[in-house]
View 1 (spheres, rainbow, N blue to C red):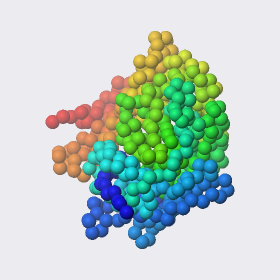
View 2: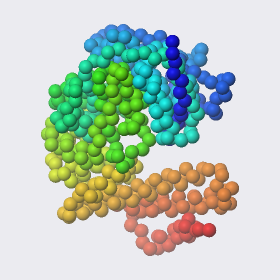
View 3: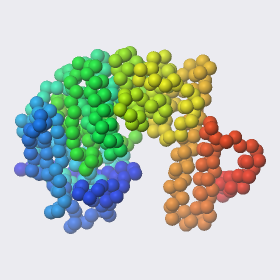
View 4: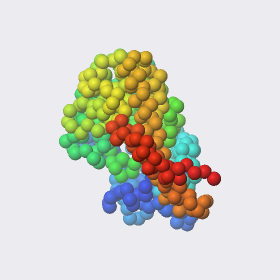
Length: 459
């Protein structure tokens, strides 16, 4: 029996130790200093099983840490997609990032794709370039073995959002695949299931199914406990578990705004196996994607981008950042989107938006897409205000984080107070630029002057 050993590292920005994040009974862990060679923990994946029950095929594996903690990692999908033989590749993809976060070796007691094993060094290199120096290496031990034959199918993940609708329309009509795309895959974990009641999740799932039925593709619902218990790259693990010949992961951000995240055009294909080719699909700007969707009335009418509308209807809230960004894109394209966005686009509503902008490139792109009409000029002014206030908000948050650094006083004795004064000034500027903020006279700003002057002091 041969084995493959590699080393790599990952600790995502904002990561919290598992002891703070997971409830008792889950595969808990702790953020620890780099383990010594004599005390390295190991994640063992073994006892792979397949069973068909209640019109569902379940493939699962036992995941153990040492001799104590253990639970089963499982994927459930329609029985006609049941694999002829069990393959360890989906389970390696599922636990890999979790093990890297916790600095633990991985041992898979099942054959794993030779192609995936050969790609692990590249996968680790990508993750370590995303988050340099934040983790130590882990090793992976698994016997190499060809996975079972693929189902001659092409599938795509589908949520009825901009990215997934663009991928489906492009693969169906503009860039046909071989084998052709025939399956749209959805998982309830694509929704905020930790915050939404079960009835709402079922309603949103039904609406996604109805949108998928507007295409010639079959809607497939997949269930798994990976996100709940292991986090990691859920899309590639589900794609490998289904065993299609090709699995499309719809692209997210524009090329100019790519950043370290769970799915990435340079990362996703590295998880491909001899059985399943993983494609990060749909390389286009956001407004190009919206323009393609606008040419398909069925896609446009069922488009859903909002995560804040917690009613059972299919409407977008027309007030959140994602809704407003999409509405402005549709406005710039002169597309009638009243079925998906029933509220009119109002520059005042745009200007009042105060949430973090996660895609600043797309907002800048909108400035170039708008015309010279009076309404477009008002929208452009609102967008510039939104961008400015977002920059101030980001500066305020970073200053607040910096103020907790105990080493500041060692750099300059009064630096902690200077950081606090600057944070205070930026916060007031952010509030003053809100369209509904109380209008300040010169006297109001003079009263704030001494602290603002302290905040801009230089040495």
